[in-house]
Image (cartoon, rainbow, N blue to C red; front, top):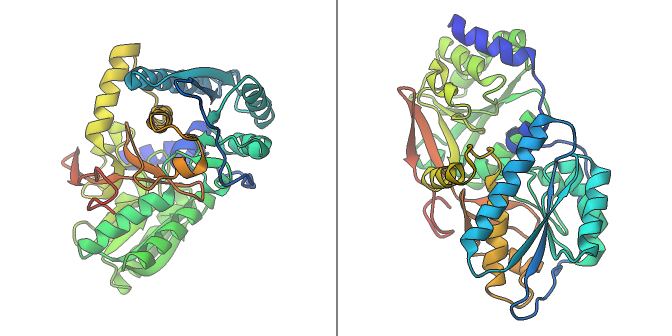
Length: 396
């Protein structure tokens, strides 16, 4: 127990959503206005013509984390190009320094140099700026953000979204007889958005919201709130508790304290809206044992990790697979010709296959990904329900 407190205290003392963490796990939550663009954006290619793709990466910011991320995205994109074989993609890399103004100017430069589509940038405020700049030119933007506030028009988000994850977990919980869910969220914007996503998911998938509870994101705040949260869940006859907490902040402490106050899986299922297997040390925490969470197809991603490691001598960055997915989608559409990069083509219902499994882009700029449902037992990751391999699969 003291070890759990120590780990949680260290996380909470440094609580802030870093730039990379925001792009990957907790949303880049800047206030942005989606770019309005033509619904049929995209350009036609001549027979056998190579498509020029602008890859916008956050190098040049002076942050070591951004340089690591930029390298990972470039490497993954090049790995995808090599896997496409006959598809001709001319990849050109443009540094944004994680800055909206520079991202915008680099995107405009890329299009002036012949880019037919933009892959990236990472951060939501950058992607929004790029989308606005290119909205009138028929150029689509496949950003690495997961902030749905910037999606729409010519801007798509490739990152995993709260709503997609919530829908998958809600469907699974209802099928397992755990559809009456108490939602417990951090008192911040990410927590509120996660709570809203799960409420919509439960309503859409035949579940019930047993109640909504929250806590101040601090050690004292969680300690003070946990007994009341546990009591509310029991009084509401909740079959499950949905937690928006992340592994680098509140998750270690809130899961342990809920157990200490009488809520334990499997009688009350613990469901996580974020990944509970990253970092791997989380798997050893007592509080997360038996919990459910969603993740990309682990077999496919393991293949990508192995191939990336062999090619570049280092493990891939956690979100580098999004660059591979973007190139995979572009390559698949190029083989079909006839305005392959139009919005209509990008949003085809059958979707695409990438290193994270199947995915498709939606007309509103968001995405839908095939996810597995996983659990942690005896400090080991285990798959409860595999990721679907098509959009007619059981996970949808």
